[in-house]
Amino acid sequence: SKYTAITLAFSVLLALWGNRRLASLFSPRGWLAIGLAALLVSPVLLWNLTHDWASFRFQLGYQLDGDEASAGWSLAGALNKQLEQLGAYSPALYLGGIAAAFHGLRQPGNGRLLLVFALPIFGLFVWMSGAGRSSAHWTLLAWTFMAPLAALWLANFWHLFAVRLLVYGSAGLSLVALVLALILMLPFIPFADYRHPLNRILGWQEAAARAQALRQQMAAEGGKEPVLLVSNWHYAGPLAWYEPTAVVLNTEAEPSQYRLWYGEVNADTRGILVVFDEQEEQAGLREPGFNCRQVDSLPVYRGSTRARTFFFYRCEADAGSGR
Image 1 (cartoon, rainbow, N blue to C red):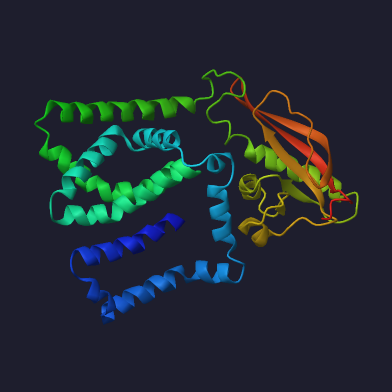
Image 2 (image 1 turned 90 degrees about the vertical axis):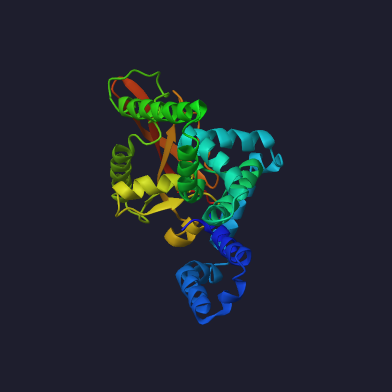
């Protein structure tokens, strides 16, 4: 379901070529496999074909635009993401997987087949992590391929003290991480205001209810039916989850799948803009294309810690914006 799955198509070709079975791709069973694969991805392709390849253009623009991409490929950025992989997937799997990969490349057999599917994903991740944006979960499928190889390598070299130390240390770190994660969810653990580690996921239900109430007050005044507004499509999901009957529009001008699915703002769009801030004070807002004024705010607490503050703005489309 991720666009990085394109590597699997190349891995299939490499696997067949490496085993001198490339001709089997054109057998009846090979054509059946190709047809089934095409059928499974056809909804994505057909939707993009009729919508100017919107999701492909968005993903390429999202990953390769911005400050990270404009600076060129960064070795430091790629190495930083490798440290993130080490923490996300555990030292035992990460280091054991690297060792198993070098060992497997020198040994014929099924190990190489697993590497054929895992290494292209890792290669794409390394390139993207140095050239633009990347997320730790992109490599989940690759680590699934690597897990049996890493486990086999660790078992074969269990007699080495360093290997046993790696496994025990990794298990201990995982246990500590689990305990810390459970502790962080306790409401009485003190943090500085706006520094709570869960601040990005707290308060959305209350914020959605407050925004809907403000929208209904605005609707009672008459005129075009107001909507809920966000300045970034990532924030639309939580609002729509807790207020599924509300129309949530994105004010960003850039084309994206979200605007095609849920509609675009226009010359007479009006509604309640929901903004959250992780600072103590919210600076004055200037939303391009809209005249907005703050009408409410909602501080969100976790125990005694103020985790974040939501701000609500009443917005009307600016007549001179061309919307």
